[in-house]
Amino acid sequence: MDNIYWGNFDTIGKYDRSLFEDFAAQSTEEIRQACCDEQGKLVHLIKADHFDLSFLETICETAKAARKIAKVDFEFLKGLLKHKSVLNYFHQPSSRTFLSFSSAEAYLGMRREEVRDMKTSSAIKGESDKDALRTISSYFDALVVRHPSDYFDLFALWVMKHSDREIPIINAGSGTKEHPTQGILDYYTIQESMKRELDGMSIAYVGDCLRGRTVHSLAKIMSRHQNTTAYFVAPDHLQIDAETEKYIQQRGTIIHKETASLQDIIPLVDVIYMTRIQNEHGGAAEYDPQFIFTKSMLEEMKPGAILMHPMPKREEIDPAIDYIHKDQRVMYWRQQRNGMWVRVALLAHFFGVDEKIRKKYQEITLTL
Ligand code: CP
Image (cartoon, rainbow, N blue to C red; front, side, top):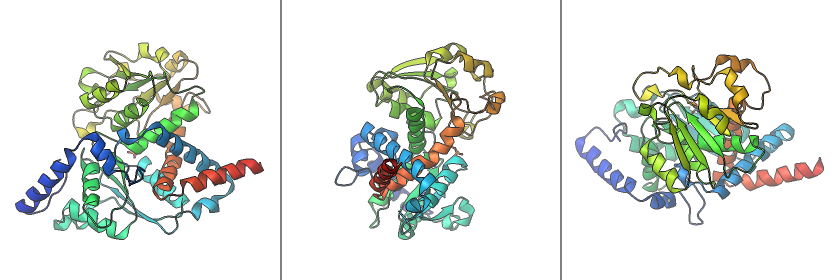
């Protein structure tokens, strides 16, 4: 919780911190309920373990519908949320998440603003994060937030729960723990790519399984399916964190850990999910060559299997693979474009226009 700024004066800091610690100590179910409205609809998107299969299915359907509608009736989407506003509040660098949210908001006609450089905010004058979040909720209808702290997602939720103007919080990446919108776009990519049911699937998570927040969110989401297998392919010091391991194991996921090399795992899995070393959280950036996905490995993949990466990527995928065009196995470029449609679907969900999108798609399909 050290990255959260509690205020200049010791008394303020201690007071806020102890109240927040009580909130954060609640059970998983209590936190999930705090993210839902009275009807049980998710109104804050904080943790991947809050998503059930019905929610995921609905978001995927809406994303697919929005993608198709944009090709034939751009103005329909643009009229849906033109009375709504959103702040993209990014305390950490981002290309994909920031730009895809910003594009999604533009598709829906939203007024959107950004804070990406904290030197331009009143944080520099000593304003606490709590006061900054309450201020933001005075001007916007939703907040998309990325932060280096593992706890900022919960912290923002807690602030909203104690304000008179609770706006949806969308976690766009919180420390090493969670990146739930990435988890959903990864899920959508898998669903759209696979010519099979997702029960019984095997996924290899490769690289930095310890601090890769996208790994944690996707592994939790996939554990919603029956009889899935997760291979964590990483050296010992970057193996899967205890919390994610326990969570997915309790949900029935079979876990294998491979610490020597990627090679033998390739033919066994339906998805190979590469990640870079997350050295912004400490340690060296060096990537063990035994875990690099090489061009020749494409030929060793199972029929129908796909290669994914949440990006940004570095040396963990052979650069020669980028020069292969329209290969149904190489999914990371499609995956990042999918992010925009999934974020359209999520914003539509929060503001209650997702059903309009799905109905419009049905109408379009009938007229074709
Ligand atoms: N996948 C992802 O979160 O990328 P960015 O850091 O560029 O947003």
